[in-house]
Image (cartoon, rainbow, N blue to C red; front, side, top):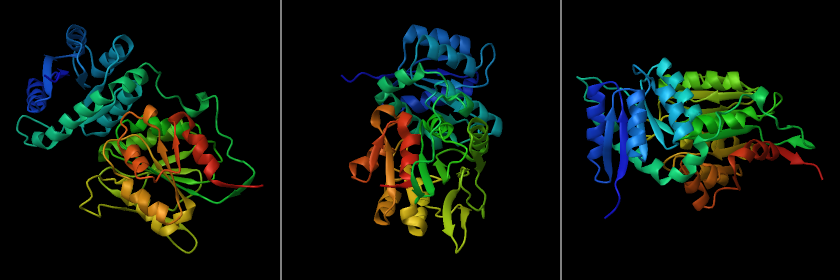
Length: 358
């Protein structure tokens, strides 16, 4: 008989404890081993039941979720999924949690009279099963300290090899486990980085503003949440707003961004496919596509378009991904020019910007 995935649910709301437990246990592969009303009780339940996964609310009495998360990661590291309110404050707290070792989040867009709960049931079950499959890699990552800011990084890439810049667009697709990975890459890039970076991170609308702000404060680059008609500048990073797509519109003398909900039928908003395909169609050979950690295969179709237009594609290595879904899809299709550890990604991107002199 197949071993069930054990989960401990920690939330101060009786409704949420019941709702999350019910959603999880509808999957025959998942068992809720225990529930807890606050972080202190949650730690006791984790010690007692040794679950495979913990779902953890952020705002709780006695001990809040961030404090409990720190204790879990120091004492008994394992995958933790945060239950996050879809507000700016919730986004900031969730990003902190991911720096402390949480692997993902589910939206707390629920109330006692809300029916939205059914919308996240499948997503929650899928995330729990996915992070358990990656449990070995996640446990090692949990013991690492949170990502450092640029001024603390010992090896900032020197962005001036011999040769001229022949690629000046970096388009990044990323999902589960993305914020710490993106922060690590950006913090190793220098002030004079000669390209523009565009990021499609699967994230709710209330989170992408705080995400951009956090990256701006941590790195030497200028980072902003992208706006319609923004003009690309080297050394700037543009984060696609949650719930909208980011695409490029090359003009005769400048490149403008379009922020839009179209195509409406896209599964993810923002979509890595939309970003990479627009870069391919307008700027092909000038573009480096970068596919980082994440569930699913978003970015695969965009990578195909990019390769067809003489662009380059980098994919994060399996051993350094939180979830090896998006990179695997690209690698298995033979689209990756290089497969790169996250520790080496900033250098790999920088090297490909230049035409090396012989």
